[in-house]
Amino acid sequence: MNIFGALNEVFYNDILFVYMDLRLYNTLTRKKEIFRPLKNKQVGIYTCGPTVYWYQHIGNLRSYIFPDILKRVLSLNGFKIKHVMNITDVGQLTSNADEGEDKIEKAAAEEGKKAKDIADYYWQIFRDDFKKLNIIEPDIWTKATEHIKEQIELIKKLEEKGYTYKTDDGIYFDTGKFKDYAKLAKLQIEGLEAGKRTEMRDKKNKTDFALWKFSDKPGKRQQEWQSPWGLGFPGWHIECSAMSMKYLGDSFDIHTGGIDHIPIHHTNEIAQSEAATGKKFVNFWMHGAFLVFKGKKISKSKGGLYTIAELEEKGFSPLAFRYFTLTAHYRASLDFSLENLGAAQNALENLKQTILELKNDNETGADPAMTRQMEEKFLEAVNDDLNMPKALAILWEVARHKKLPYFQKRELILKFDEIFGLGLKEIKASSVPTEIISLVEQRKILRKEKKWQEADEIRQKLEKIGWMIKDNNTGTEITKIKQDNP
Ligand code: AMP
Ligand code: ZN
Image (cartoon, rainbow, N blue to C red; front, side, top):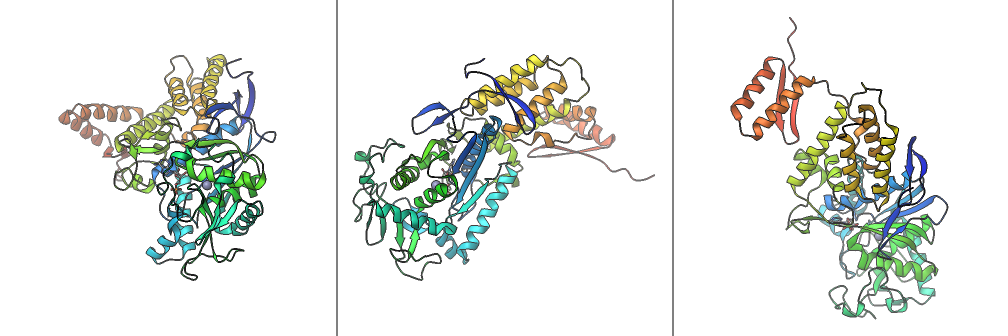
C-alpha cells in the first residue's frame, strides 16, 4: 500500500508494471484530482493543435510533448486512449480580437501559394518533428477546413437556442447569456478592458466572439464557404468544439493545450459547447506552461525562437530537447538557452553511455524487492500529475545504484523509458573498445582543465593506435582509421 491506495499490476507494451491511482491537475478546479474516465477504461483526449502557417518553434513543441507523456502514463495505468488533435487551417486571425488577417490566407498570399498547400506543407513538417521527438501521433488528425459542415451545424444549434446575434462582420456568441462563462479562467470580466482583450465594435459584451465571419470582399479570400448567414468562414474557437464533440462525444475526459488558451480559446470552447448541448463539455482541462527565454515568452525579438531543424543544424539532437523538457514539470515554465539544452544533451549522452556499460554479464544476484521499490517510486512520481523531474531523478538513482545488478538496472531503465520516450532501447552497443573510450574521456578532462598539450598527446597516441577523433557540438566523434590492405 502507498499514499495512492491499493497497488495493482498492469501490462504496458508487454511489460509488467505495478500501478496506483493517477492524479492529474485540473485547471477547472485548480486541484489535483484522481483521474477516472467517463467510460470504463476508455479515455477521450483532445489537444488543440497548431495553426499551420509557419514552422512550429520549440515552445509550441513543448506543448505537444506534455500530452505525449500524459498518453504514455494513461496507457501505463491500463487506460485505452482515443486522441484527437486538430490542425487549424482556417479562421485564426492575427489578432485575438476577431480582427486582422487570417494567418493561413496571409501566408498563402506572401508565399504566392494555395492556402491548402501552405497548410499541408507546414503540417507535414510538424509531423516530422513529432517523429524526431518520439511523440506518438494522435489517433485522429482533424482539419478545420474538412469540418465546415459540423461547424455550421453547431452554430445553427446555438442560434436556435438564442445564444447568437449578428453584427456587420459576422455571427457572434453572446457570452452574457452563458451563466458560467468565466469558470475556467476565473476571469474578472468586470476588470477586462474593452479593446485590449477584444475590440468592442458593435458587440454586446466585450468577451463576445465570432462564430462565423463574413467575407468582406467575396472572392478575395481563397477559403470561403456558403452558410445560412452568407459567404464567409468559421471563427477559430468553433472548430475545436465541433471536431472534438464529433469524434469524442458531447462530453469527454481530457482537453489539453498551452496556458495561453485558458482565458480565451478554451473559455470560449466551453461556452459554445455547453450552451449547445446543455452538458458538461470536458472533465479535465490540462494546460502546459511556456518555454521561456531569459524569463520572457520566446519570440522573434527576445530570442529562443528555434525550430527543431535549426537546433539540429547546431548539433543538438531532437531527443536532447525532449530530455530537456522533462527536466521541468509541465506546469512550470522552463527557461531555454543553448547552454541548458547542451547540459540536457550531455546528460542524455551520459545516460546512453551508462546503458551501454550495463552489460548482461551478471545474471545473478537479482533483487526483486529492490526493483519493485524503484518501480513504485517511479510510478508514484509519474502518477502524481506527471512529475517527470522526479521520475528522471529516480532513473538516475537506478543508473547509479551500487547494489542493483547490471541486468536489473538495464531492465528498469528501459521500462522507465516507455514513459520518457527517449529511444533508449534503440541504442546500439558501440564498437569502440572501452580502453579507447577511457582515453577519450581522459582527454576531455584535460581539455576542460585547459591542459592542451597533454590533451593533444592523447589524440596523437589514439591516432597511432588507429583511432581518429573529431570534436563537434554534440561531443567527440570516434572513428576507426581505415588500414590499407597489406
Ligand atoms: P499556436 O499555433 O500559436 O496556436 O500555438 C500552438 C500551441 O503552442 C498552443 O497550444 C500554444 O499554447 C503553444 N505555445 C505557444 N508558444 C509557446 C511557448 N513559448 N511555450 C509553450 N507552448 C507554447
Ligand atoms: Zn482548440
